[in-house]
Image (cartoon, rainbow, N blue to C red; front, top):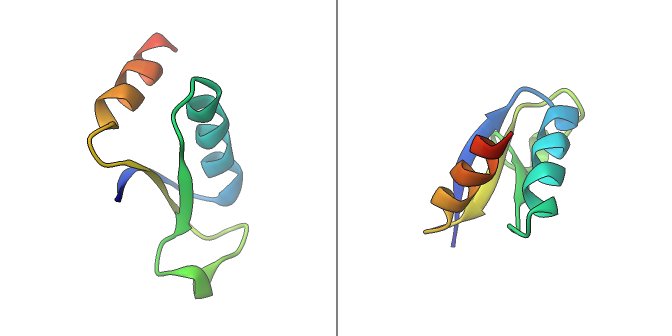
Length: 64
């Protein structure tokens, strides 16, 4: 199960968060707010993390 971890204002920022977190071994999915029909580079995105692993993402971001 995936849960929203962070909000990104556009696709570029969402991909940046994804690269940072996946580079440390945490799988991430990106989902446009409002569903897949709203997919565009300027749409806001939810950065999704596996349920129960949000603390891992917090630790990765704390290292930055």
